[in-house]
Image (tube, rainbow, N blue to C red; front, side):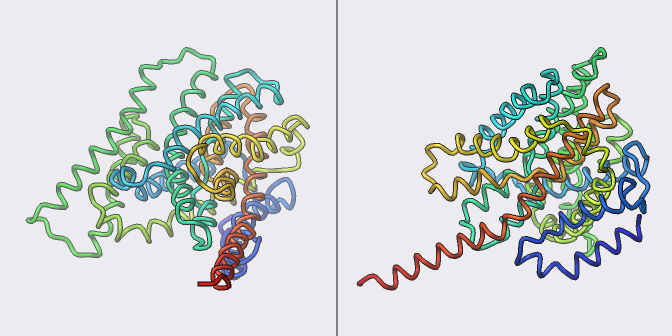
Length: 395
C-alpha cells in the first residue's frame, strides 16, 4: 500500500500543474487509484473497513484535519466577517440536514434516525476541495471567504450530531449525560491545554528559538491526543477547539506552523482518500438501490443548493455568486471519516448505510472537482467583459 500510495502521489505531483488549469482533479485521482488497486478490481491493496490500519489512518487523519482546520479560524476573524458565513452555517447547514434527512426517509426507506445519521455525515463540506474555488482570484472575494469559513468550521459543528445520532441509532441504553460530558470535555480540554501552553510560551524566562517555537502546535496536539485517549474526552472536538484557540491566543505561532501543518494535513487527506477508494468495490456499488442513487444525486443538486439559496435570501448577492456558493459544497474528507465511524459502529444496517455514503461522496468529489475550473473561467470572462464595456463607454 505504501509503494502504491507513493506512486500515485508522484503522478499527482507530475500532473498538478495541469490539474490546476483543467477539470482534472488530484482528489479524484487518489479516489480512483484506490478503487482500481483495491480488492474489487486489481487486488493490489488488500484492505477491509474493519482493519486496524484503516481505523488508525481514519483516527489520525480526522484529528490532524480538525486540528489544522481550526487554526484557520480565530474568534476575532469570525466577529469581523461573520455575516455571509453565518448565514451558510446557522441557516444553510441545518436546512441542508433537514432536506437530506427527508430525502433519506423518502428514497432509502430507512427509519428517521438512520436518515438523520446519514444526513449528519453528509452535512460538512470539504475545505480541500473547496480550496479549488477559494484559491482562485477570479472568484469574488466575499464568496471565497464564505466558502473558506464555512468549510473550515462545519466539520467540527457536524461531529456532535454524528455522535449523538450514532448513539441513538445503536438501540442500546444511551447515557446522554455521559455523552454530553465527553463532548463538552473535549472542547474544554482543547481550550484549557492550549491556553496553558500559550501562557508558558509567553513567559519571558522560557525563551525558545524560532524553529522550536513553530513546533508548539505539535506539542499541543500530542498532549491533547494523549489526554483525550486517557480520559475519554472527545478527541476530535478537542482537536478542533485547540486549533481555534491557537489561532486566537497564539496567532504568531499559528502563522509559523500553518504551512507545515497544511503539508501534513494534505498528505493524510490524500492517504485517507486513497484508502477510502480501496474500500469501494463493484459489490459496494451494487448494494445501493436505484432509490439510493437518486438520493445521492439529489443531495448533490437539490439539498445544499436549495438550502444555501434560501439562507442567502436578502444578502443582496448577485445571482451568479449565490449560485456558486450554493453549488460548491463538496462532500469530502470529513464525510469519509464520519462514514467510517458509522461503518465501525456495529449498527445492524451500518454496512448498507456506509455504501450509500460512499456513493454520495464519490458523486460529489467527481462533480465538484470537475466544475471548479469552468466556474473560475466564467467569472474571469465576465470580469473581462465588464472591463471591455467600461473601456468602450464614453468618459
